[in-house]
Length: 120
Length: 108
Image (cartoon, rainbow over all chains, first blue to last red; front, side):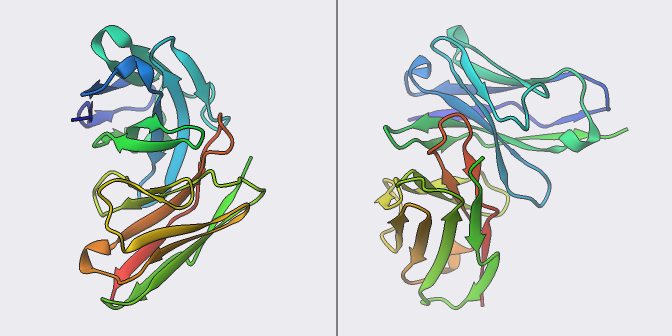
């Protein structure tokens, strides 16, 4: 069974750093891109970026380029999303999802989400 | 960037009604269009990919159509468990996927 299990909720202060994780199981982790999606409170879905764990090739949405870093450790089948200096506006639910399909691509499996709260 | 515009933003319908949600792309995206369902407090779930292909395990009352710039998600007979927000998403731009703003479906 394909599963993406994300790390737990975080409460941080502005200026702090954070790294959240997404562990894949039940499939070949290095063969599928993993994407990250932000959902701010009461708002819609925003595509942040995507990584291919096989070679760590990474693409970012222009809106998130330079604001976050996406990485992966294929030895433990885990992708990461990190911030070096959080802002209150980073408060949101963050989802990871597996990209599938060809030539049409879609997210077929999603993690349960990680809620990040940034507050002084 | 390719912009995705959904309509309506919300709707209220009765059990058994036929419900239609539309999604328009700012440029042609062929059939590179997916639909997701997000129930309250849950992660999104893939319903339709490639504009009209039903994801495995999704009830057949869901269907998708369209190509180019105009797409439709139809629920043929609305059920109570279909209470959710529905999002379209384009994957034509391989390095920048975009979602529609969502359509909230409520049950009368």
